[in-house]
Every structure is written in C-alpha cells, then in structure tokens.
Length: 86
Image 1 (cartoon, helix red, strand yellow):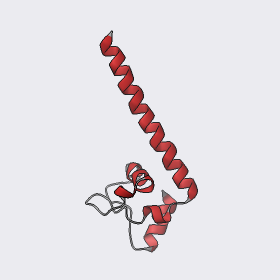
Image 2 (cartoon, rainbow, N blue to C red):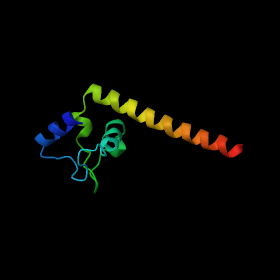
Image 3 (cartoon, one colour):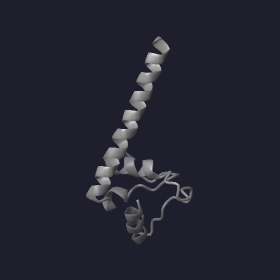
Image 4 (tube, rainbow, N blue to C red):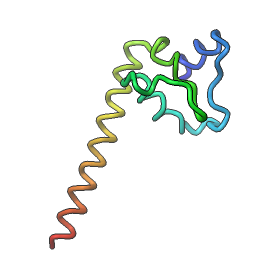
C-alpha cells in the first residue's frame, strides 16, 4: 500500500483521511486492483489510479487477500449451517 500511496501522491491524490494507519483502506485497494467496477471516485475513497500504480506483487497479494477472506466467510457460513442442523 505504501508504494501505491507514494505513486498516487505524485498525481496529487492522497490516501483517505479516515484511514489513520490501521489499514482499513486495504479492502478498498484489493477491490480496486482486482475489479474494474470499483475503480471509481466515491465519497470514501478515490480508487481511479490504484490499479494503474499496482505492481505484479500487489496484484498477487490482493488475490491472496481476497481468496482468504472469501474462504473464511464460506467456512463461517458452513459452520453456522452445521451448527444449526445439530
């Protein structure tokens, strides 16, 4: 994220002010890197230039992050389903 933020600062775009170093914007970065639909400017975040500055390693890390979160959600759904059946 630091690499992308530094490159975006060269385009006069700055990280979101609501993210004070806790990494809450990481999910926004992941969606902007992986999906064209999320490369827009909205009230919370300007994601138009994130994919432009993302390196190959950033894309790999974003894919790993997305699959791990999706896998965790699926596992929690399955556990909840089996817990309610017993």
